Length: 149
View 1 (spheres, rainbow, N blue to C red):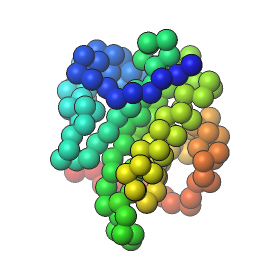
View 2 (tube, rainbow, N blue to C red):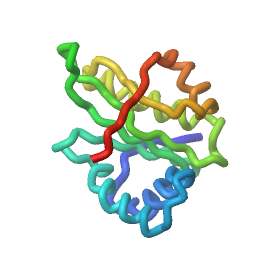
View 3 (cartoon, rainbow, N blue to C red):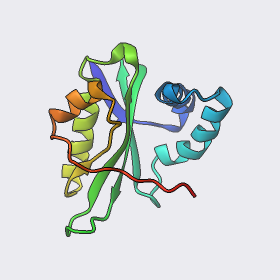
View 4 (tube, rainbow, N blue to C red):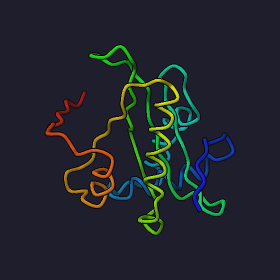
């Protein structure tokens, strides 16, 4: 049985381990992961200035996944919207409903806060995640561009 809650300040070490697992495909050193954590940890705890939120997925008191998301203004609708930034479940816990529970929690948050919609991106090769995501909504035909500064 999964439990979903907000991170607290005492969870920093467990956040590091989750973020390290999330970044595994990036082949980052512990030092590089720690540098990212030092930037994002204060935001994970909820930064009112950038409207960030994060939830942790636990199973028998062990942290096994997370999501973080932002509420932001909509350029086309009167209601604000939600952007799901990251979603991760440790590989050994995937396929048990934890990812679905995290997404449902973000959807619930969005309903409770009168937001217009929840959107997110995934990599085109991530077919396993797309199977879950397609159960919420079919993907759209958008191509993302990025200019590094």
